[in-house]
Length: 213
Image 1 (tube, rainbow, N blue to C red):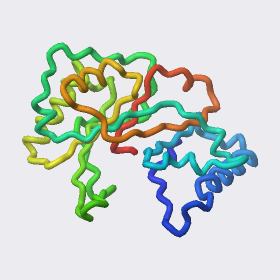
Image 2 (tube, rainbow, N blue to C red; image 1 turned 45 degrees about the vertical axis):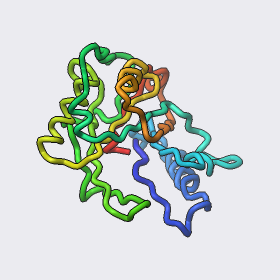
Image 3 (cartoon, rainbow, N blue to C red; image 1 turned 90 degrees about the vertical axis):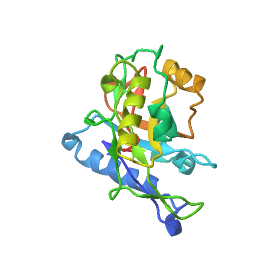
Image 4 (cartoon, rainbow, N blue to C red; image 1 turned 30 degrees about the vertical axis):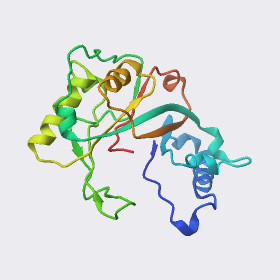
């Protein structure tokens, strides 16, 4: 179960809305435990200058029942730069031992235009963000090869970009390969989870498509 796209209107910020939502959900669960159809609940929290949504977890907040299951580096790169990536020597993808939270992704490139539109605070102009959402099982020969493939598709489609993708910070090989070519993350996102089964614990890496964040 994914608590996704929660945005709190300005007048309601600081009034414990996330905690109240979770309290209501846990109450429903307690009253009808047999109706529980999920075993893992998670949410993705983008980190800002003042931290993320967990700063609202004060006192005996139900938000503290969750734990950080992954820290993701989020990248924003121009398509042409990805298309020109040197992929020789890129590390092959490690596909085992992880947790893919976007398993239904079947495309190399996804646009959320019309469904999730972003506006730049600096200019008020639309931000034509596109996503490279595939997880390790769909990268092919390497993560760099997938990024270059997606970059070429975006260039051919004349998509302005930037292209957005995320990497678990534990995927050191891929992150270091990109850093060596001058490509570094522009934001960070923490995935918080609450599990009722041990099968979701101890993952070596987590993947969450940025189109889902």
